[in-house]
Length: 147
Image (tube, rainbow, N blue to C red; front, side, top):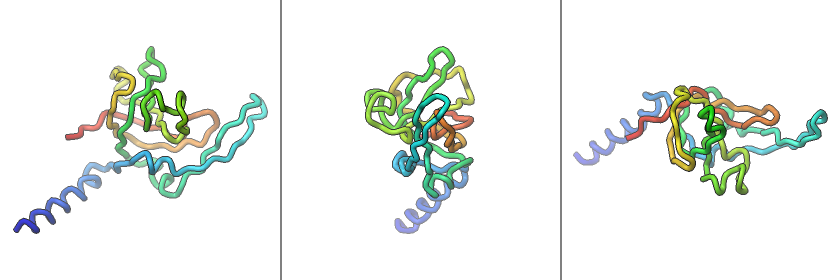
């Protein structure tokens, strides 16, 4: 009897992602990217053009769920970045790479978050290989309703 209950619970839990239409993504998956370094002749700047793995490419345009640390990008406009690491170790301040942050395009622009607050978001992941912009953008991002 107990075995049947475990099997039923496993089936229910396994199906929740498809019911909610979201894929839980971790930072290790997003780290699977390499870079070609290219020079912008007009501005005389070098930048890393990302080469996303097939696993990451499969997530482009999909609803995902990811947990990270909030980093305020522009407090006056409630613009935030989600990071794999807290502020002291983030891409901008520490030794992490650009694959460790996600630009948040929030559904509710008036929501306020604190620096290094740990939050889980859901939204549509968009991959971005354009120069001088973030590799990952979470469109229509909103705080996940997690138990």
